[in-house]
Length: 176
Image 1 (tube, one colour):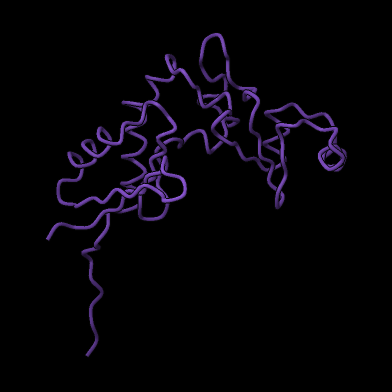
Image 2: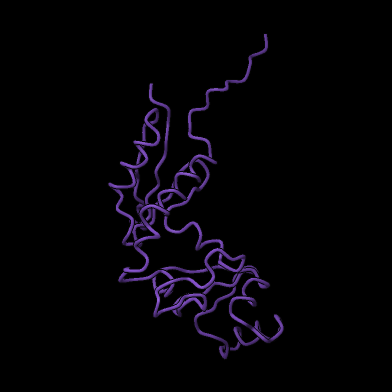
């Protein structure tokens, strides 16, 4: 006897989670950016990651990858850049796309905007939403209220990370 696969999945579809995260950010997070006291674009709390071609475009690197990597190894390169497993990480120096006077992103809406900027501070990771409360615009109570209204047929569980409690993992399951 063969069993028919269930079409009633216990979790929220991933695309719906991405949509809700994006909508929450447009409604609550982005409007706050212009008045933020700790803009993530200053890269004091946030790390950006790049593959070489994207990194070169944003940071206007004139050297070859080989030459640039040599400066990182010998310590003469920018102190705010690290390379690990072929990925370049920047931290501790404002993103070149950030206009500090206007408190806006000059890269917003362009292909140059780093991917991890587009989904910070609320994003989907597998079947859960991640909410990073280092962003002062993220109030976890407001986010959970927003999600409950959008997903009334689901129970939610918010679990702050034990080692890094500013990271909240929000999981979903169908109400019984």
